[in-house]
Image (cartoon, rainbow over all chains, first blue to last red; front, side, top):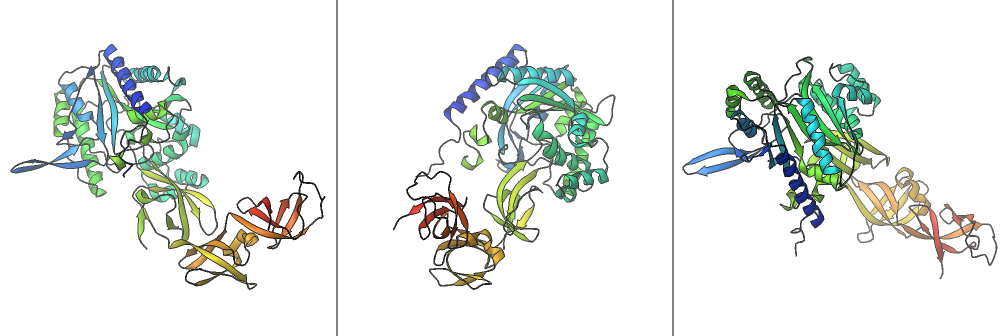
Length: 326
Length: 189
């Protein structure tokens, strides 16, 4: 008889998930942030060259349409914001093709929220409050700290992440027994940063504590706003606990023209790499044209949060049915 | 030989890396939410035994290595090569000192062991976890002392030296754990 009908997580972890969901809903209810739902299936999809999506066929005879499973609810939520929803959150599934490992399942749960009127510092305060609420009575953490990306990168590597020096980065790779970095990263500053950060910085971030890293290099801005005082950095923040990337947030870009240009640039990169063609979400661009209120947004990987709360070594330990058993 | 993508790297998979046959030990998918995906892989070089870490861009692939473990009987040492035979087929292989390595300490004629073949020639030899070997040389020690405390060196018929309890004598057969090189017990006839 097959034994893989069974869930991979314990009943105890099912309960933990239910409790955490209830606490998150309480947290946002108290702050008057509205819970919303947006579609999992959509006509447009993110253009991020690093995100692979699932496509599916919508058949309404005689028509057939390609729809996408969302990689995050960001675009739809921003359309709600532009329509005057006020601050909103949702707990939803997101899908990323080809992502599978100890910290990845191609279908996973995101907590995503947007707080109208918040800039990055207030968003970071709110993250710290939420994490404290969830961890304090289960697994108390040490004091939260915030670091600028440049500062933390330099501290662990001695390299300046904002100025790309091919020679210095190569020398660093050779000195640190990572010669393969040179052929993988080439002259691509952003990939160098991903490589070095994930090998030499991230593993040390937040031993039993929340670490927030903000002010990412502008080449890694995605949908964040460029900092108004320093064009080399972007108003983006990432959360780490025990070296695990837990969340990503932005002081959101509201400029429709700039957003449209970034989409086109990313679509171009996708074409160059022969990545599956993505369909630019014109409705999001139209929403930004109508006007997105100033806001900051954060997305937290809920499954990873549950891993940290339960000291689980693998995401499978907190999922009922990971992809192999789905 | 087929090639394998980083997604297929599982513990035990044998692949070619830098022209040497290697075995995957561990494979971790690393991906910043908004960044490039990598696989950090722990690999053992099967020629040297060294374990290294190497990062690949996710989706890269390596050629498979034709490496298999075969149970064989150790036949004899001709001075230059050691000779092995597959019991079922009588197929014979010869391995040089480099391939035999540390296993030479534990190989007794007729004993079964595992020979790792790469492109059908011996790459390494792994003895059974426990072997029984006769003592050819050791100090007389103290008769009647069965405490096992202290101990003394003893040379085995293969030439290996292990620490044995004081009461063990020349000519006796002892059981040894080849993974640690430690004495386990006396073997009584």
